[in-house]
Image 1: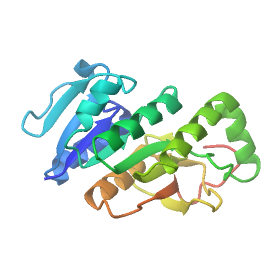
Image 2: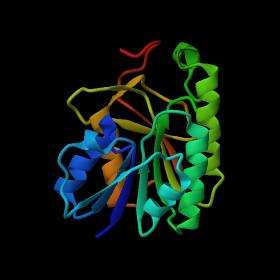
Image 3: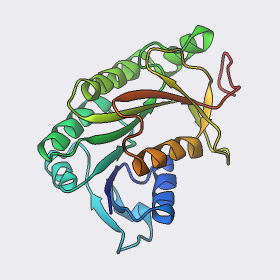
Image 4: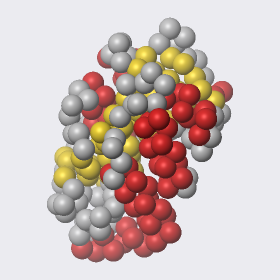
Length: 210
C-alpha cells in the first residue's frame, strides 16, 4: 500500500486527487495543510492529517518520513517552499515528487498568448516560479513537473501533454484533467519520470484563455 503525502491538501485540484485516490486505490494519504479544519471529515483508517506550513522544515521533514510519493500543489512564494521540499525529501530518502505549477517556465508559450501570460502573471511571480522549478530540476529527485494552462472547473477530463523543449499548445485546462494526470502518475509512478509536462485542453489555442 503506497504512502502519499499531499502538500496543500485543501486545494481544489488536491481535493479531486484525494477523492479519486480514496475511491480507486488502497493508498494511505497524509494530508498536509495549514488549517486542518478546512478538510471536514476524513477517513481515519486511510488518512493522516498534518496541520503545518511547508515553510516549517521540521514539520515537513517529519511528514516526509516513510512516504513513497510526494504530491505538491501549493500557492504563495514558491522558491523557499521548493527548497524545503527538496531538502526534506532528500533527508528522508524520499525521491518521487509530483509538483504542479503553471505554464511559461521556459518561455515556451508562443505568440500573443505567451506575451499576455508574462504580463498577466507578472515578472516577480514568474521569476519566483522559475527558480522553484530549477531547484527541483537540478536536484536528485525523481520529479514530474506539471505546467498547467489556465484552470477551469469544467466537468470534463480532456487534455493533451507537451514535453519540455516544445511549444505549449492551448490556453485552458480543467482541474479534473490535471487531477487525472496526477492520479495516473501516482498509480504508475514510473510514468513521466524526470519530466516537465505542459497540460492543456486540445483545441483551445488562442490569444487569451476562454
